[in-house]
Image 1: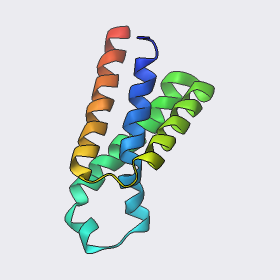
Image 2: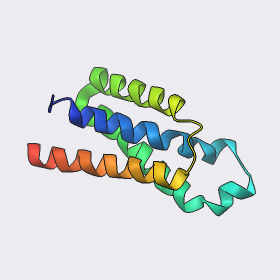
Image 3: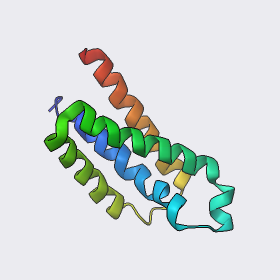
Length: 104
């Protein structure tokens, strides 16, 4: 069970930040401008999770992690409170980094 947890943390991190990251390219509303710091954090977290998935786990397992994350992004698309969602995503990424630091 413990060997699966880091991969799940990456999927959660990617999935919870991906929708907010995509708003950078699709939305030009005033609401987005007011929450730009949240969007910037979501972009950093989602891109980091995407890169770490492939770099740390390889192309095959990394691809499965990304697909699981994108499935979570589809499910969590309409969740309210983007600050909390992106915060959970950042905590998930930080926890993944903590797990991998101990594995070295």
